[in-house]
Length: 159
Length: 159
DNA sequence: CCCCCGACTGAACACATTGCTCAGCAAAAA
DNA sequence: TTTTTGCTGAGCAATGTGTTCAGTCGGGGG
Image (cartoon, rainbow over all chains, first blue to last red; front, top):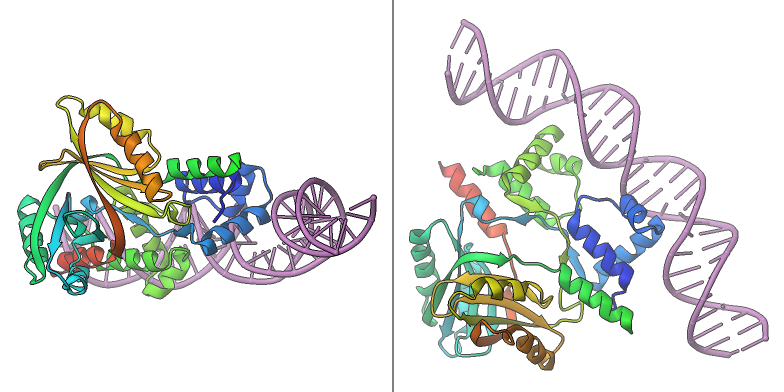
């Protein structure tokens, strides 16, 4: 779970050029191939690197509309709602949160009109009391991890 | 931008076993290697597959706390706020949205106490009028794309 | 103070995979 | 019918992978 500077460089390099191989990496980083391989194995078994799944763009798949919905759940229905939302493909992500709402989910849809269908699908379930939806217009900062990795590596180094 | 059944199977297979190669894929899918290669190239230049960056777990990096903050922005300060938030490593994602709030961002922190620091960092900026934060407790549905891909493939097939 | 251990290096090897190109073929489009 | 498009199966050189090994280095424990 500790992450040193080399780990950080490996992750950043991997994030920038994912198709790169272990050998090429070792060349760029100026360390032996075995070292990179060992670090990568460690990072993966640590769970720091979960995997290398393809990053699919919903917009390119025909789902250009993204929205976040805050849901209020009837007491004791949490598990049912979770199960229900898990069956809806347009629900990309679901969190239970503190605060007035109880759950927050990320939705996608084929159009604004289609979003209505998705919301009905989501909300049309017994345990959900109320839903507030915010449609995403722009995404100035797409999901990113590099700055955090660099921060973590720097923090560890400073120790 | 159309995605057929084979494309769908490729993406799903890739999502489940990312380390798999083109050759092994072609074996599993029962098609020629060149076909898989061509499809992959097409999916990538289409932008359907953005890349294969490593999926890093912030929790394993020492940032186990996730939160969503809804921000209200002073008129005309949007660009400045965006630029400011982009410099904060703990801001993993930022969206501008419709609705009462104006922006929604995903934050991580080293602890609940540390979250205060992050929020101060985020909110301690001139253009931000108000912030409402929801701390994530559970994540019943982690960010996923497979069901949507299957849906999209099925939809296309039906045509 | 010395020794052991863990981490890194550089090298070697067999083997699998990649990138590329080709001709043949079938079905859809023109 | 002719053309175009996409898939197949094959071959080739080049490269990368998984693995193992002995040697080096530095720090921590004995």
